[in-house]
Image (cartoon, rainbow, N blue to C red; front, side):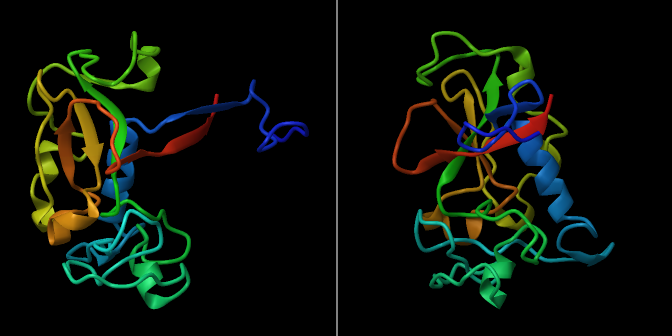
Length: 195
């Protein structure tokens, strides 16, 4: 899996890198709501701490709070609360901060994404309806008061996680619709997987 001579040492015949798909984000979102995430039992779960302060990584607030809090290193109480597991081993920056574009599109609509054509179908989720059960969408709509706006022909691309100025309405279960245009409130996340 490792090779000298490239930035990360990955062997391209063994590793696939791509922008996060909507169902991949959804899988992580579901795991936050399990005993492998932030639940201590089947009935006791806490929300991932929301970055209500900045687009910069490392900020968080107590779970469910819209109070701005300064950044805390990953291994502090505040830092761990911003992780999907509540520990230093979770995934960070999935709640607030900057919206993250994911590869989830309505009816193969390119919109303002800048694509001349869509990539191979294994790299995106195509939705043909304006609701969908699965991928942490319709079935988790408005959990923890997170924003829930499904994609459509005018706004065909999913953004996940919310924006820092959304306060308590941002969160790992937040999903919203965008035209695909770039902007200072948007980011994305790479995924590295075995081929």
